[in-house]
Amino acid sequence: MKVLVTGGAGYIGSHTVLSLLENNYDVVVYDNLVNSSIESIDRVEKLAGKKVEFVEGDICNKDKLSQVFKQFKIDAVIHFAALKAVGESTQIPLSYYQNNVHGTVCLLEVMQQHKVHNFIFSSSATVYGEENDVPYVETMKLGTPSSPYGASKVMVERVLADLALSDPNFRGVSLRYFNPIGAHESGTIGEDPKGIPNNLLPYVAQVAVGKRDKLGIFGDDYPTKDGTCERDYLHVMDLAQGHVAALDWLNRHSEFSGVEAFNLGTGNGTSVFAIVKAFELAINKEIKFEVSPRRAGDLPAFWANANKANQQLNWQASRTLEKMMEDTWRWQSNNPNGYLA
Ligand SMILES: NC(=O)c1ccc[n+]([C@@H]2O[C@H](COP(=O)([O-])OP(=O)(O)OC[C@H]3O[C@@H](n4cnc5c(N)ncnc54)[C@H](O)[C@@H]3O)[C@@H](O)[C@H]2O)c1
Image (cartoon, rainbow, N blue to C red; front, side, top):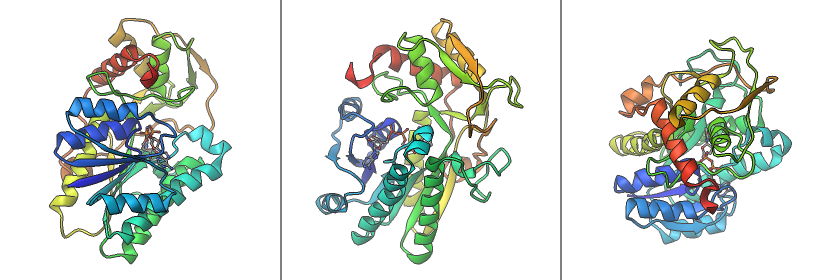
């Protein structure tokens, strides 16, 4: 089975490509490298001992996408390609809607032209917005996220629902990721943010390796156990395997049409302070931090109810917090400058 992976050179994409290869799927990666490096694909090929077809291109370029569908006999698409920085999305919202929403519509149009119906979408816990109680369950109504990034994910889920209503052949899965961290245990692929990291773990790791002075913690006066925000962190390799589980689910359910959402998380919330402590323990070194005021738009705490994915996809996030920290550190200390090193 041949899978087109958009955004496959990125953080989650590269780990998923590895899992796909290990599970005997053939992979074509389509990525414009706006937030990634081709080096990640080379390293994935080495780890898997298998070849990946790579095409550099933008999902908004329908002609180029169409050529890819013509050249390769694609059976399914996993769609990671998106801009993902919440803060940046408030500065340049039009780029986020153009890339994430318009780009997805272009991809779906080209898939329809080429009669490819299997589609897995990188959604996010952010679609639950501020309205829903925790833990989040798939049966909840979609919320209204405060950032253009979050709104772009809600919009795409709406596009998929409408497409499924209009096209009886469409077979979509929305995977709502919680907070992926960690790296492949080889320490050769991992998260390589360009510029100042937006996410907690890459920042902590860069402080540990001496690239940044100290970690800024936004708010310690939230109504949580220790006052800092709580999130549902899961190992990126568990998340990668969630995509293989979703493809297997589509293959098992040949009668299925429509669109189905699954939460991918552990079901547990962990605070920022707890993450810092766990990282310190893993590397046996203190992490300097400073508490500053709360950041607009940050929710106090959320985590997944992952029962649906556990039961229907036969998938579970099994790697421990300790392993997430160790693997992050192996990647960061072996590659202090990411893929440029
Ligand atoms: N990392 C997280 O915490 C998280 C959480 C929830 C959802 N997601 C979603 O998962 C997906 C992957 O996230 P990631 O963390 O791996 O991000 P990433 O930035 O590492 O990967 C995204 C990839 O898409 C590519 N890309 C972006 N725009 C493109 C375009 N127009 N055409 C072709 N390629 C393009 C980038 O070059 C990059 O390789 C994204 O859709 C993101 O919104 C991520």
